[in-house]
Structures are given as C-alpha cells and as structure tokens.
Length: 294
Ligand code: GRG
Image 1 (spheres, protein in one colour):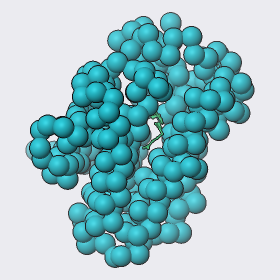
Image 2: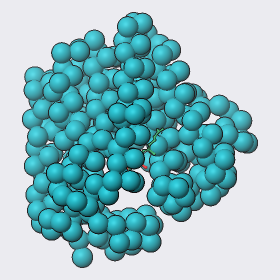
Image 3: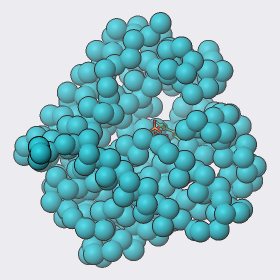
Image 4: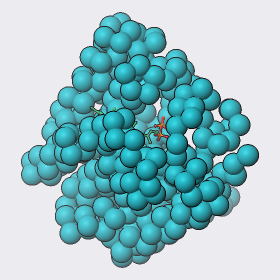
C-alpha cells in the first residue's frame, strides 16, 4: 500500500474538520436568526479562507484547536459579507452556493440580523480560541475587526457600489480587489501568523494574500464570461457590469492571474523559508487552469 503524502486527502480532512467545528460553534436552534446563520455558513462552499488559515498556520508551526477556531472565525466573517452582498440594496442576488440567498429564504430583516450576529460570533470565537495565549487572541480580534471595518470590507464594498471604480481603469479595479477581496485573505494569513507566534512573517504573508485576492477576483471576472452554469451562479446578476476583462481583454487578464499566483507562491516561500506541499496543493485546487471565455 502506498503511503505517499496526498495533499488532496489532507485538505479534504481539514475541510471536514472546519465544517464540523463551524456547526458546533453556531447556535443550535433551527428557527429564526440562528437558522439563517446556519444557512449562511453551513451551505457547502469552497472554504478557501479557512483552509488557507490552516495550511499557512501549520506550515508556520501552529498546532491545535486554536488555529481551527481562527479559521472558523474568518469563514464566519466571509459568510456574513456574502449575506449582505447578496441583499437587494447591494448585489440583489438570487442564488448563493447553489441555494436561494439567505434574504430570500428568511427575509431581509433576518438576513441583516444574521450577518451582524456572524460578525460578532467571529470575534467571540477568535477571542476565546483555545490553547492560544491572550495576546495572540487579542491581536486576532483586532485583525478581524480591521478587516471588516471602515478601512476593510466595508470600504471595498462601498467603493465597488458607489465609485464605479471597477470599470474606470485596471489600476482602480486592482485597488477595489485589494479592498474588497484581498483584505480578508490578508486577515486570514495574519491569523495564521498570530496562532504560530510568527509576527515577522506578516509582511510576506500580506503580499501573498493580496496577490491571491487579485488572482481570485480576476478569475471571477473571467468566469463571468463563461456560459451560464459553468461560471457565474446567476447569469442575470451583474449583467452589463463592466469588468477588467472588458478593459484589457481576456488573454491579458488570464496572464495577470498567472502572474499574481506566481507572486503569491514567491511571497509564501519567503514567509515559510521553503515550499509547502499542502499550500501548493491548495492553491492548485483553488486556481485550476484559468477559464477560457466564450
Ligand atoms: C459587515 C462582513 C461585513 C461586510 C460588509 C458586504 C460587504 C461589506 C462586503 C462584501 C464584499 C464581497 C462580496 C467581496 C467578494 C467576496 C467573494 C470573492 C466571494 C466569493 O468567494 P468564494 O468564491 O465563495 O470563496 P464560497 O461560496 O466558495 O465561499
């Protein structure tokens, strides 16, 4: 029997651990706000952010249940942001992770309350992460609050909604990507460093996270050009919204995705002092061959 190391198996195990822990952390009732929180978080998603927390954290030497709770806190913030982003006042989406969006299932009032509750739960979970020192937990809460707040996701979303920045130039689109997407990847990787007590790795991790955020968002823009079902979840949503693909063309955007992924790998190598097979596997899975538009 082969005992060769299989990154896919390890990632699948971590993913199950994240899902079990998320289910245990959320309030148990099936009705009301608790039901909406469960729908927002437990509907299966890629879990890219928590897997990054675990992969980078372990590669930096963090072990134990505290790292897992940091990973879950980041996923709760991510899911809260998706609930809000999907609401009629923002993206007005009908589907998320293949299911009707939280506000369509539970009502807008409950969706807003669930999003607020998820942000506060994320902070509570990070603040009480087991087996980690108090300064690491305190720093993690600060990092999460900054990632959400007026200079975090809130700013990125405002910019995207009100400043039409995505459409003006490639540089403006890149800034929106940093603010709206990169910021939470950066928080995820900083939580890994917190759990491992490796603050000096943060500048390299931040560079890696922002590059991952750029690649992620540009890939998303490319997928918007694919036929319904292969790319975007809801083909009517965002119809006519201008993206960097219209500005630069799909080939240039595809090259840019690859360049950002190269920068991310280089920054991770610099943070860790080596290549890490799990992280390499995770990035390969998260960014399979760049999609070909129509
Ligand atoms: C108060 C938390 C909070 C946020 C307020 C609404 C908002 C500000 C920000 C939303 C920003 C946003 C929608 C960024 C894009 C996020 C993104 C790239 C979503 C898709 O992520 P995937 O593909 O989704 O990883 P899954 O479902 O796989 O997790």
